[in-house]
Length: 255
Image (cartoon, rainbow, N blue to C red; front, side, top):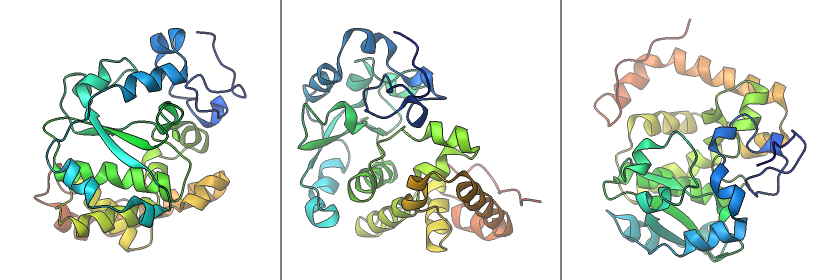
């Protein structure tokens, strides 16, 4: 595959410039697939995967009126994570997915929007738990309701601005939906999501409108403000997340 320049279209097929899409994370591009398949062909292979229903996946999807919540008339199709990984579209760094475990992935809708515009896809494993489900569903609702950013499309901006990509991938609107889903389905969040919820409820997450403006000065200031807040409230946060899935010990207070 020919190496793309910063201002060329991204090889992933999103239609965005490389610098605003996969620049800085080229290893995630499906190199072998991209050499031989068009975006439509990739989408057709994904759409051909059979639907699955693991854990509370279908019950949660059926419990959401997506049209009312987001204004978009689309459904959610769940496919098996290992089967999706075997298509070769994931890139590197997804060992658990390739083994059919580890939860779920929101499939980039740019891969399927032409082949199956009536659905968004979540690839999930049989061992998926409720906290992972609501996290991925929050990504879906954020994408449908507020932003055009598909999963995995903000790494280039994070690299360019110099802030953690998590701060961009989990904006204020994501916090809103995570909070909504956590309460609606009565799910205990994992430790990471409990921190996101704490930041959301205290008004500390970056807004999608700010991300869309791509103002590095503003985004860096918001990110630094988030870090300071986490450091100042480390003891309270530790009390909230202690005992939750993914808890690895007390947070160290920022100096």
